[in-house]
Image (cartoon, rainbow, N blue to C red):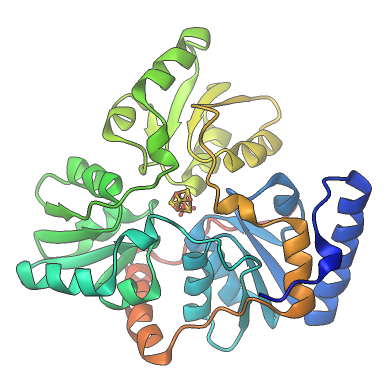
Length: 327
Ligand code: 13P
Ligand code: SF4
């Protein structure tokens, strides 16, 4: 990996301001847009042109006129943006920022499972590699998984790679037979039912909002289950003034900014995705300066993967969940 040594983090406020100005200069020079996932560090959310959930960000990437897309998120998200925007340059500031759940399945293993269930459709969560998407019939996100599975004609559905999301879909759609992959998010599974019960003791009026990647026991006691984009919508409209949030900590920054009169508590302080936190201001500056790391998808894989993504979009329409900075 190319590194400009000037951009090592010091945590110093003045240094961070200097980096932000440098990023603004480089952004202009490169004709770039900075696209940021809801779980990124606060200072990365502050330099975003667009923030949102994984799929909405890919869609935002399609709409931009910029030539370069700096994707502050994890690898599969930048890859989806590259599949949907083959003519643009997609940069992932830190190449090691992967999603461990996406790595819990390979195209080869999925092909073998498909042979065991020839009458099943394959639905892959967007948290998957381009190769896995290319082997799937439909893609889905945590906001539209129910809509996608409900729509498809097959009763049997191989759902990959998140077991918890698959089980959640099964609980809501009993007429379907879901064959869940055994993948999981190492961050979301850290929250336990006891954590929620404990925090509820001091905040009995707070509503529990959980991401469907959490364990079924946690989902069973949640007041509302939704994607990161769904959390913004729900909390903004809800009458409640206190919320316990069972998803990655980065969400709290934006929720608090958006809802100054409301209070948000993390379900546990351990809800931190290490991969999401790898991206720093220094790495964003370095990425724009050195034009690294360019994310590309081989044409044949991209051509199949885009079909799964497009089928999802045909079912659900274009998501309107990306938020332009300042909105
Ligand atoms: P969203 O698609 O809801 O942004 O979630 C992505 C993710 O990685 C959740 O852990
Ligand atoms: Fe992957 Fe979990 Fe991190 Fe999301 S929070 S990127 S699913 S490891």
